Length: 518
Image (tube, rainbow, N blue to C red; front, side, top):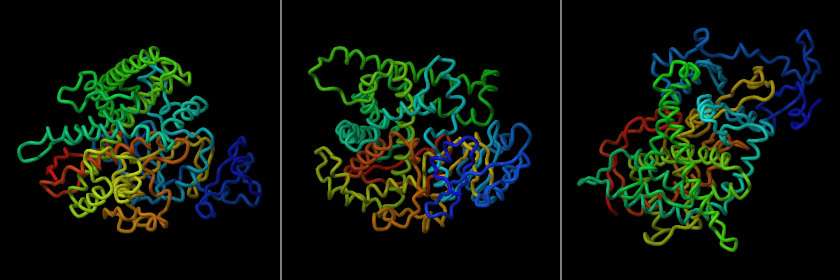
């Protein structure tokens, strides 16, 4: 018999059977096991013939720590994206590996990914960074949308969706974000040496991302791109960097071990979170005071903090969610832009084609850029999509199974973490022709019809996809337009930029570019 997916998800003790061969890329059915383990119902043969979890290929590792010691000694924790690609080539489209306390099952076939994500249920769960949760417990802080689960997560997510994912909201935030993009141009001019060279683009773009993102969170600029930025804003950036720099250590060995030994990594990690929360609380307090002074007839402020307060979240809940959204947005957007600018400098012909499109639809450097203009620039959007294919800052995604499942012919128990690899899928020739080539035209509507939908997942999929996607895309489009209007980008050494893992995929080396006025 065949059961509807909704029934399968809600049925106690049911097991999901994922098949890449059905017309929808997914088949879900229910089977019952007897005491002896025999599977009843003739039509559920796939569950009966599925291989056990232990049979999933992968490295054996050592007792208790798996391959964590190999990772530490071999130095590949900061190359997890390459490591996953090598494991995929060695073991195939599904493999499992134990690193420290966690056993992960990794998949890199778009059809298998589609099956898992489409059957994730009402309350999808993803791998939770234990150190993030521990830090909040120590500080007595609530969890936000990034770390929460179940009904609380859904409540937060529903509220945030209304403010951040509706297309009209991007237009509301565009003027201030465009102002931040213009400020970035002025800032970069000041940072050039006499030869036009700008070093450490990562740091500069981190400031811009924080400045631009703060307009959506707080409806104000923090002054990070000014000649004398306030100490509070600089401290916030330092706190985010401190958190990200110590996250790999927390993943290699259990955070509880770091805490018990009071390691430097743990002290820095906790200090980063404490500073992050303290500064965000100050910024929220300013908005709360502003809201108290606002007269009823005055127009409501468009920022996220004011909105969350208006829908009756407590100040503690607002704080937790703003930290989650802003903290996640700053590093992802800045590093994607870093990869983008480096790639354009490496491919002058692509840069010139982008410049031609920009000056065609946004010729006036002094006039505001609108969403209508951005929508007329398919090459601009294709450049960003192609960068996200080759350098997805979220190089892996995760889901924790709520039910026993059969994935790719293997039984996987509930509670196991499935790792999805956008980095691997984006460079797989089965998914993209000439995958190592940078080809923005592949994303034109007429060319993208045959692309596999789940082979490109830089923002995730479904209810737990990136809640700040529209804001991030708007920020990057505006900044790229303003930079292309004003500068020609050149590399001193035409070499490919290699990524490393620092919680996210980031450039391995300092990005230094020459900016020539147009």
